[in-house]
Length: 358
Length: 81
Image (cartoon, rainbow over all chains, first blue to last red; front, side, top):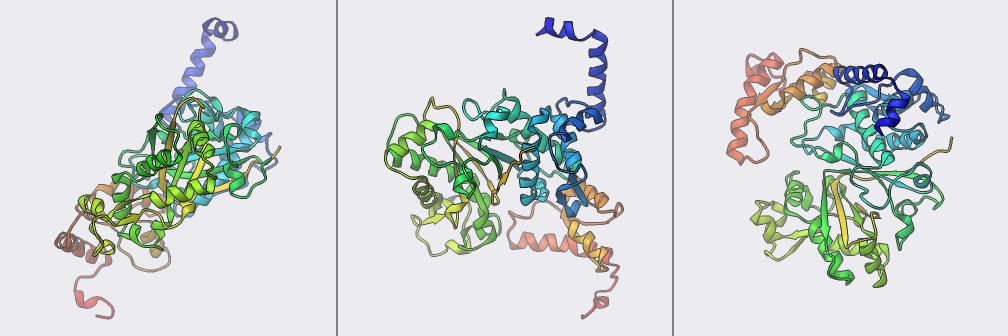
C-alpha cells in the first residue's frame, strides 16, 4: 500500500490532505474520526447520481428548526467516505429515517439506527450480508451507516454534551448498516414481508439501543433455539426500562407498549434449523412474541411492582409487547455457526423505502 | 424545553422544569429555539426512581423557581385562584 501511495502522491500532497482533515476536526464536522473534506466538486459527484434537486428536503426536525436537503445528505455522505454510487441508497436511508424522526436521537438511552438493506442494490454497491455484518471492514456498510450519524451531528446538530443526552450511547451509533442474506434465507426477505416486490431495492430502519449476542450451537430443535432467543430478548434491563415508562409497558394498548421494537438478526444456520423443522417466518415471529416478557415475580424482584401486575401470581407471564409486528426477523450473517444477534429498541420500524434508480 | 419555547412563541407563558443533569441540553435547545437567555426551573436529579415523598420534595424545589419565571410574586396573582 505504501509504495502505491508514494507513486500517486507527493509527500506535500499528503501533508495538505492531513491539514484538510485536521481542519474538519477543528470545524466540529466529525464523529471523532477523520472525514473526507466535502469540497463542492466531491458533493457534485454525488448529486450527479440522483435526479433529485439539491434543495429538496429529505428530513425535517421542526423542534430544532432544521432540515436535511439532498445537498446536505451528499456532503455528509462525502465526509463519511461513501462512494458516489451509494448516494441513491443513502437518500432512501435519510427518507426512511425521517419517518422515525431526529427527536428520537436525543434520548438518554443513546439510540442507534439499524439500517437494513434489501434487494439487488446489495450486490451492485457491495453491501455485506454475510461475515461480520455488524463489524468493521466493508466500505458500503460502514460508510452508509456512518453518513446517517454525520447527518445527525452536522445537519441537526445533535451532539453529545448538548442536544444528544445519551448516558452512555453505543458503538452502534457510529454505524449500523447491513444487508439481509436473502440468498441463504429459507423465507421471504424483510422487504417482501412488508409489502415490497422482491425485485425492489429498499431500506428499512429501526431504532436500536443495543446489540445482544446469542450463541447456541448445540441444538437443531427449533423450539430450543427460539426459546433461547426469546429469553434473551427478555433480559431484565430491557424489561425494567419499559416498565419505567410510566408502567405503560404492562398495558395492552399503551403507546410505549406497542412501540417496543426488536430486530432478530437470525444467523443462516439457526434459520435453516428452524425452517427444516417446518416453521414459517410468521410462526417464528408468533413464538417469539408469545415468549417475550417476564414473570410477574421476576418484575417484582427487579423493582417493577406496578399497579398493572398487582394481584398477579409470581409465575404469571407478563408479555413485553402488544403485537407481533414489534418483532422483525432478518436472516443475515455468515452461514458458519449457530449464532444470532438481537437489535433491541423502541419505536416502529420505518420502511421499506424504495431506493430509486438514477 | 422545546415545548416551553413553543408556548412562548404562541403567547402562552410557560416554565420548563428540568433536572439538574440536563442544564447543557436545556441551554443548547434554548439556543436552537432562538431563546438563548431562556430560564428554566431545575430540580435535583433523579426523578424516576423517587417515591411520593421524594416527588413532593422535588415539587417544593421547583415551585419557587416556576413562580419567579412566571413573574408571580403572590400566589393570589394566579389567574383563576
